[in-house]
Length: 586
Image (tube, rainbow, N blue to C red; front, side, top):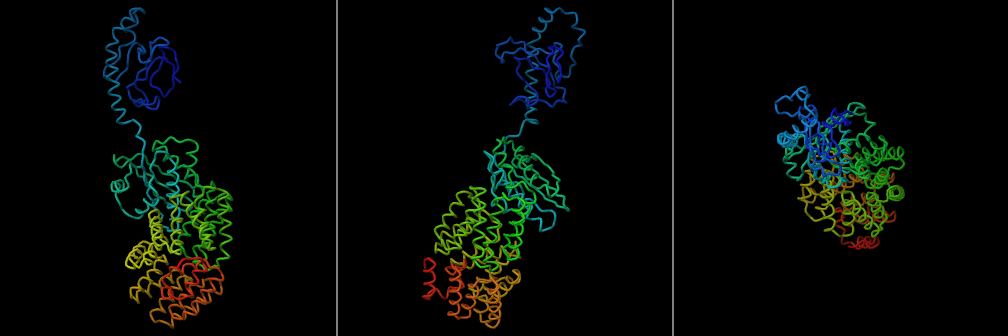
C-alpha cells in the first residue's frame, strides 16, 4: 500500500493514483475498473487524483485537483517546484487552483483521449473468442506408440472446451481431416469458419513429456498466446486439466465452478488410469485379435487403478464384444461380460451415451432387435458426437434390410470420425451392398494410402476386385489381409472364398482345414467356414455350418443377410428359413 501525501489516504500499489470517494477513474490500469483503458505503470503518464465533490454529489461532477496542485503528465514540461507555491495562502491557493481548472481540464481531456487510444491499441483486452479449432496435436517423438497420447489429448481438450458457453468448438471429425497435412492457417480458418486455431506439438523423451501450444487469432494474424509445458508422463491428467483451464482463460471465457469442472474433466484423476484408457482405445480401433487383447489389458489396468472410471468399463465391454468377430471367441462367452461392464459404466454415469451404444450391440448379439435399436437411439440422443453409435447402428440396419438408413448412418459416422479406419471400411462395405464396387475400391485404396497396415482394408478390397473379375488382384489383396492379421479367422474366410470362387480349389481346401481347426479351438466363427464351402459350390456343407451357428446363436450369423459371399444362395429355401428363424426380413 502507498499513502497519498495530499489527503493521507492509502491506495493499492497497483494503482497509479489515489481516488477519493467521489472521483471518477479517467485512466489507469485496465483491470482496475471494468472498461477503463490506461498506461503501464512504468510509463511517465501518471497522476494522483482526488475528488473535491461533496458527499452525496454525483460522481460525474467530481472536481479533480492534483497532489502538490500539479498534474504530472507526459507533456514534456516539468512541474513547477513546490517551493514556488510555498508562500501562497490557503485562499490564494484555492483561487489559483480554480483559475487553473480550465487549463488542467483541457490537458487531462487530451491526455485521456491520447491515453485511451494507445491503451486500447496496445493494452486493451482481446475480444472474447467465439469460435476455435483445436488441431490434432503433432507427435514429434517419431514413435508411433505415442500417437495414442497426442490424439487422446487432442480429443479430450476438444471435449472439454465444448462445454464452454458461447464458444463454437469444431468437433474431432472436422479437425482430424487435417491430420498429417500441411495446410496453411488462413485456409483452415476459412474452411472451418473459425476465429482462432490452437496448435500443439507433443514430444516424449523417457518419462519426460513436453507439450508446446500456440493459440492464434487467424483473421488478425496475431499470436494470442504460446506456452510450453514440461511434465512427467505420470502428470498427464493434471496437465490436461491445466491446459484446458489456461486455454479457457486465454479466450476470455468466464467459467462457473460447474463449467470449469466439465472443461477440465478427463473422467479420472488417476494419471495411469487415464493413459491406460487412451492406449486401450487406440489399440481397440486397430481391430486385430492381438490388438484387441492388448486393449483389454489396458482397460483392465484403467479400471483397477480407478474403479469409478466409467469410460474404461465401456472400453472393457467393447473389447469383449469385438473379440467374437476378430478372434473367433464364441458369442455366449463375450456377451455376459460385455453386458455387465456396460451396466457398471451406466451405474457410475447414467448419462453416458457410449454405454448405451455398447448395450445396443449386446442386444444385437442376442438377436433382440427392438431393444438394440432403442439403445442406439438413446446413445445418439445423449452423445450425438459419438461415431461408434452410428457405426454399429448402421451394421444392424443392414441386417434388418434397411439399406438406405444404414448408408445414412455410416455416412454420419464418417463425418464425425473421418480418420477411423474401421468406419471407412464399413463405408466401403455399404457401397458393396449397393452394388457400387467402383466406389468401394476407391474408398479402400484411399484408406490404404493412409493406413496400409489395416487388414480389413485389404480384405474387403479383395471382394470388390473379385466381383469385378480382377482375379489376381483379388487373391493378392486377400493374402495381404491374412498376413497383416496374423492369419485370423475373419480374413482366412475371405481368402478361402476368393480362392475357391476363382478355381484355386486345392489351396482353398487348405484354408478350409485351417479354418475348421481354428473353429475347434474357438478362434474362428462357423460362418467363415460356410463361406468357403459356398465358394467351392458345396452348398449343403455350407448350410450345415450355418445351422451350427444358429444353434450357438452366433452374433455373426445375421450378417448372412447382406454379406456378399452368400449372394449365390439367397434363393435357397434354407436361407429364407434361416432369416425367418432369426426374425429378420428377407
